[in-house]
Length: 235
Figure 1 (cartoon, rainbow, N blue to C red):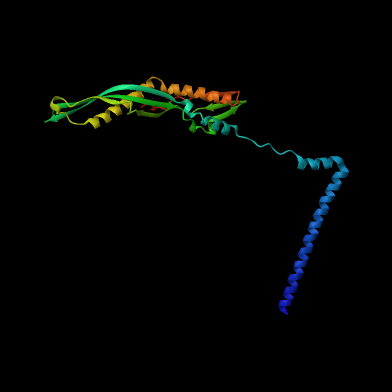
Figure 2: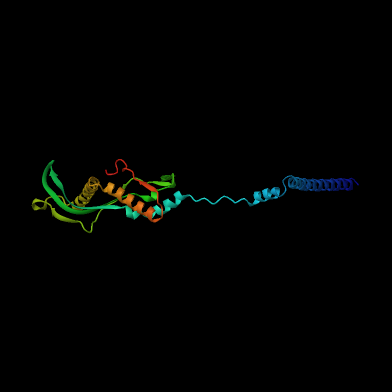
């Protein structure tokens, strides 16, 4: 009996809750209809037009971050900004053989090296933060020029002379002397390239290439800015 009574109470409560929800829903619909009717009576067709305007107002146009587009376009011009400096240098090297602290023989090696230095502006470093749009003018800040690569072309370089001195008593250190000659030649070529303005040439090439790219892409008002080399770049 108790179980049946509890089930009856639950059924009764559920029925009342459902009826209350229906009354609330009906009341809400009546209220909306009442507001709609009052609005029509007061403003006539304008109320309907205003109501339509709420749902038919044009949505905001999608926005495009032009900075990201410019960055993607400019990054493809990396090879156009490269300045190449080549140089041939003759580097002598030597190593003594000593006996009791006194040199008794000397080995000399004369190396003719052909070196190449590539400098440029790495456009892969560009980010949207490097692009600003001010008063319809695009301002693009390029990264600083860098030494991208320096190398000795071993296929075009050679040992011109190798001499172990009197009776060949000098130490047989041809590989070591050749490596030393290559290292010193590379330092000399990089130093000379910097003195000859290879980094400035890289800046000029980058400025010209990026300006032409933006112009070809249809941008009319733009300003391309370069930066000086990072301190110590040519050491």
